Image (cartoon, rainbow over all chains, first blue to last red; front, side):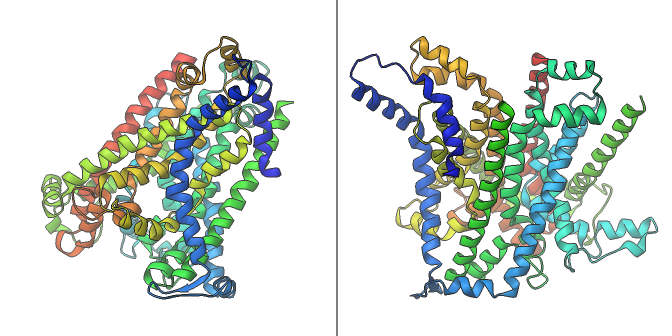
Length: 318
Length: 270
């Protein structure tokens, strides 16, 4: 029933002012209301159902088979038991957790800080542009660029050598966990622009009176930021943090383009394990099982997070 | 005063840090393919950009790819945001039974890993003749971008004071005109933001481009560039970077325009 927290909340919001039926017959009024709702909801629901949910269900069904793309044999849950005893899967899970934590700490926090610091600043637009441009760059450009930067003879090592820090030179992409960490930094470079924009939109909705009142009360700098701005930004924070969790759990592109999950399988995330099992090794059933586990983790994480946020919201309203 | 200086220094530092990699993309796209040595350059050696762009357009149909991507990103993004706005109006304002359930049903689209869809979609598209058609590409892009646009709009519409729709209902306004005349204009900024995000997402998608299309007049530009990247040995990284740079111009411009609009609307409210 907890899933319906949002439902209950919204129902109590909309409940008291249902449209007064113009015609006294309540049944036709109810039918008409349902038709309205249907017309508004149907396109979104139909498209999501047909093109996303149904393909997912097919994949989930496939995870119960030993399927090499040509023949399929029903094996029940044995793909899953094989999965949980596979040490590679443990590493992949750990990497995925690193991605979730890393992208929460770096792009989200930096986006928030930069939004607050630059939104009333004279040269703020320049700084914002610098941070937003990478978000608009295409993935292939980003991948090529970071390959340049991080290769053993790449720009980072070149620069370190040139400024006399040759001892800091590393084979950035060849050792775990360093490779995962530098890829998180690369993602930060690309993704901070997105959270910056969302937080700027959030800042827009804070009434200037609120900030002024806090200023008059003597709130300044960090205090103003923590006590006034951060709580006021909560609706947008829910969006940014929610998306960050979901996207980092699904991390694929940048790892695929920079290390292919390697060396070996050291930097693989769950999405890569799934892709490799399915499309490289043709173990469709096993790959499907990985994707089901990944999906369960993503849904559980976002549900836990959003549920908590909804509770806090209603708590604030009192 | 010192606080302001510290803030300025911090912001300047971050900007420089962010600009260095961008700088490298630009400089290396200018490097003539023949002079490329394997290690990155820090300064322009000669204006090789146009030659690189020409090579990119000649060895792969980057122009046609750009046009396809433009169609998908503009139409797909706009349709997705419209459909998402309708749905978020339904779950936040209309008297829907169990709106939370509907919310999760649509939101789940952002949660499911993309690779999960690939193989079933490929077979589905092949049997329905949607494979390698522009309609097919548009359809999947719309479906993929609805959930996030819906999430953003719904969170925005929750902040619209309920008194507004209450008053409109007392006036006997029907749902469609309430949506068109009140909620749509109010949500303008959120909708625009959602559109820009979805436009960028479609613009930069590679996975579905390479899976669901084949012929040059259907393939998005990212897939074309990936083909170019596959020919690494023949054209070289500067050409790929030049192509990627050209392909990134529209999204960069979009963000730039959006930022101006955004700063203006900030002033209006202040």
